[in-house]
Length: 289
Image 1 (cartoon, rainbow, N blue to C red):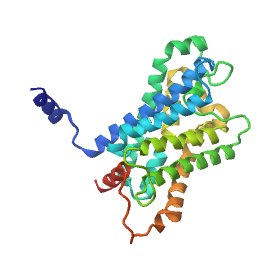
Image 2 (image 1 turned 90 degrees about the horizontal axis):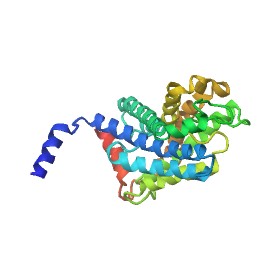
Image 3 (image 1 turned 180 degrees about the horizontal axis):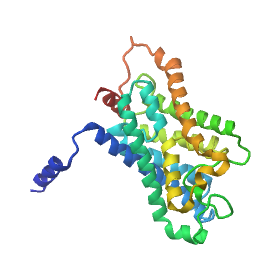
Image 4 (image 1 turned 180 degrees about the vertical axis):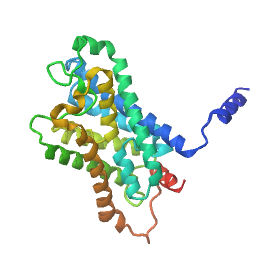
């Protein structure tokens, strides 16, 4: 009887259309990424570094991306990043008409993740800030949700930082899911992808953190604008907000082109290809559907 009930629920509630399944997967995956990542920053900042440090944040975002890939990877490929989705479009692994749906899902998932972090730590925010939510000053909390540049960073330097950082993220993801390369064991790809963020965090985080993801940065930034921080989240640091949006998109395209020209193009088609990883399979399935 329980089996019949479950079958009946699946028949009536399960989504049939592929793009809706992928939309929900990208939404939930990005939500998981932001909840763990921004949650780690919130715990560190709101405890005044008593319950966190930079390494805590690196672990939060690394494990967050790993879990996001596990949550969404089998359905949508687990991009959770418009720059990754754009790279997949460039390489023909994602149909271009699906790209806007993926980006919207990622943006909404990041927005919801930020809202969840704020709700989870609402009392701590009020205690830390005395009810005054600000982007600058000794009790600033805007940087919990979105990136802001260090004092030494120029506009050009910030743009280059995001191009290079996101380029490395996408380049390494492409290597991990490439069936003609060494790749990662089936089901272990999310772990390997999470380690990319750890590497980037400990090597390229000085300038502005490592947003590397337009949805992950802009979604929470918009949430803070609506939740009490105001439009200062967009105007601070000479209207910095567009750099972690445009830079990663450029970096994703550059990485896709470089990986194709320097690695993928030269795979020997005479040799049997290694078994595809599960995420690789999913990218192929999305292309075909």
